[in-house]
Image (cartoon, rainbow, N blue to C red):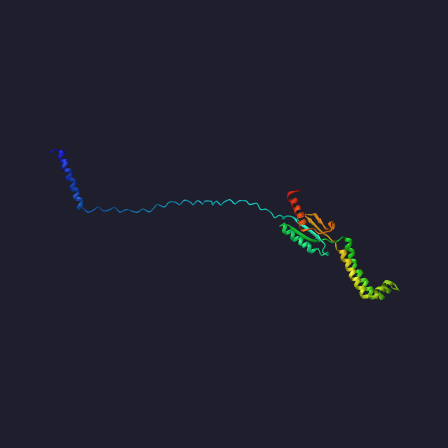
Length: 220
């Protein structure tokens, strides 16, 4: 047999013998595997993301219709015009929200006020003469009282009552001005002294509304 034949026959026999030896031999020990803990890595700083809020839309705030405007109503308190003034104030505040309505007394001229202060003195003087004229006139150097004194003395109660009532009427007339003057932002827009009447509701709102429009947008 040549070498080639020996190699071909011997190789299978060698492989067969190695297989038989592996069957009867104990299995090899498994290598112990070491579990490696993960290497700690430096934690990266947490990047705080800026929260993006939706941009709010800018809303334009519209001021009230009457905001920044002032209406002055000067009226006669002794003429019982307060109720009309209060009603006009409520009307304007409802029609023009934010408007400032100021009520004030409109006094009469200085001359009438001074004369009205004298009326109570005259009243007390006449009543005093009616009650005790016989003692007052001699002290004043008048021996014989005038004839009108006897006329007043003949009806003492009627004379005193008439003096008191007439004096109060004259005093009330002198203290009353009869005014109902409406000013808007310092400008006179209605005068009862000129018109001899009160303004109507629609008329008053139109007058004030026109003045407010001129103030806000300029003369039309």
